Image (cartoon, rainbow, N blue to C red; front, side, top):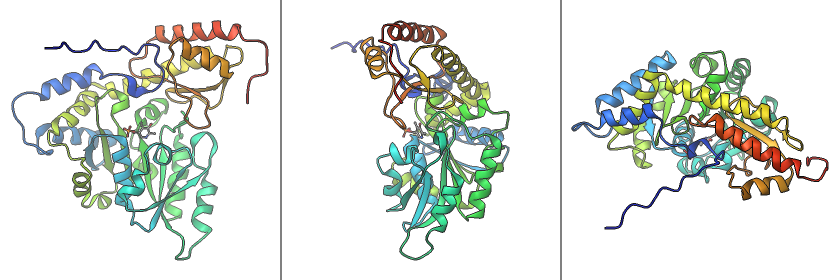
Length: 360
Ligand SMILES: *Cc1c(COP(=O)(O)O)cnc(C)c1O
């Protein structure tokens, strides 16, 4: 028998929080759920407990569904809010638009995504109003949903007042409000507000709540604060291949993370690491912050030659998000030593660059 291949350890990694593994609390919860048999398809005690914990977390009687990933969670949630002749308004850099391969349009049978601009990844509310008001005739896909991302794709966070303004605008324009919360925990950790305040109390109808990037192996929760909108959502999940038969293993990690408090601690750690990285990068010649750092990502512009030489040294980071600046993402298991090593390399490589104006 051939032995298992040695794992390729991806060191020097600031590409994404989903490069990280499973945090201990999620891992232990899965091990605890791995005893004996349990009813399939979500009719098990772990699923019931995880739903109850999420209701406690949000201080409301919301309806909860567990799916395998964020693309499914977002697109099925949006499909549930729309008919095929409706449209969904979201930011031009939103994951729904740029990173889901048309899944929202696919699962909603053709609902159109309408894009709005906005500074640093946050929707411009005047542009939202304009998108709704510019046409009211039958030839235009009727706007039905506003979808926002918290924390945003550009590493910023809507503060409580901004969220309340978004909620008020959605209500005023008669739009359902969806929130892509792949990094909701990171937003929560950076705000002095409760999960309820920054979701349903601000008017969010449906939230796709991230688990994977917070330290789970797999899984996100779709949370309907507006329970009427959840009608037959279970059928939608099943048809889309998102109803796990061994559901307890999607549910148990939520128990582990919520009961231990690791859900918030993991996010706070990632945010702290990003804050440290930000303060160090600000000191490096030729490196400029391009978005305010409010969660666990640092976006910077730097000379292309510096990007290249960092990659040559084995550093992993993305340059395809937003306007193509470099993104350094921290996670629940980022170490201060990782940050120190990156900063040391950047400092050294930047010092070798010929003096020149930094690129736009
Ligand atoms: C990661 C992410 C998702 C979920 O992506 P999947 O790969 O489908 O799990 C959704 N929205 C945002 C903003 C993300 O960063």
